[in-house]
Length: 402
Image (cartoon, rainbow, N blue to C red; front, side):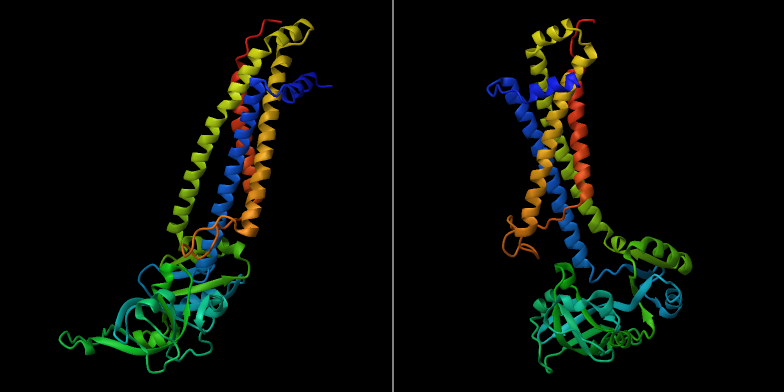
């Protein structure tokens, strides 16, 4: 029988509920549990937001994206020949973007027109974000467009009318008639057939049209601004990126989905790190309760310590009693905290109890995503902080030399 562990259990499960030492011990256990619960909840909510952002931007952010390092556009043939040799690429889509001036009835608005080919639907599953009307299919040569919800709002756009078309204007690079405004711009008309909604920044900037229409408008045949790639295995995105980058050379830039929104993800990770550090700081402060409870217990049990010494128990065994006592407090508090943290996260995930307010975001309640690695991270972190707080009072026990 492990005598120090047996005595530690007796101290922990003492029936003297009114003892100040027991009260402080329970407060220590409660503080550890609250810290573990808070860490699980915060990590789960940040994971939920990260997944939400990934899902929102996945429509416009493919697994890999190829752009030019030496200009806004490039000729498509050289890049396509390299893509066709890569076995991990399932499909790719050519796109061409340009800033344009839109005129609709009496409204004017500056937006970005994005020309896409027939494979763009396969790359993005664009149908899933159509909120009104339809997406164009098999109509590469048609003058149709699907506009973002924000663009539609600023233009006061209405669908279904062949007579109310959007006029797209862009500076005419072949002509230089400064005094004749009409000759200075190339212009074409588009029929709006749908409205999409992804995220506010995208919705208020983009309209999607067939690639051939945009190439004709810009007079850039076989010229693209990017090639979007979907992979057979998205977990191979970094390896595939390195392979493509080596083949294409420094004139081209190959970006993973993370790199396409690098600034956004850095902000999210910075916020996550800041909140975690604050919670860890609070956890460290709350761990002083363990130091206080063990110090009080050691002081209260001085008579018992002398008795244990008198019956032959060594000083290291006596210290082990209090190590075990602190260990049981920390471990039980951590497990309780993890249990309630996971239960609360599951409730939020299933029922969305805590809402974000009406019209405040694209979802009604705080998103939650529970990751097993986060559970192990919280378990290990709380145990380490707790055990370090146990070492301080136990190491300083004044014991007579045995």
